[in-house]
Length: 118
Image (tube, rainbow, N blue to C red):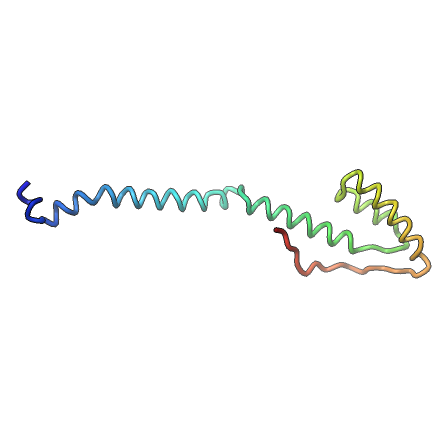
């Protein structure tokens, strides 16, 4: 006890050691909580990557068509649309492609330059 009263550095170090250990463990647990989902494949990043991939697929498929091959275009689009929207898409593309048929219009191969997901 006399050492504690005189400001012995060894005693001061012993009393602060548990606080340092708790602080270090807290930091390690926090870092693990942030990093583990990234390595396991879960979390928002994986969900966001899946949405970005789906948007990329949609944009590429939607913008690649040949007026002379309407059935193929509608078939490629079908899995990317809801059933209700697919019916509307078929109705609209039948009308639009019918009007453009004499123009022999094509889109070529689409290149997606950027995709944004909020």
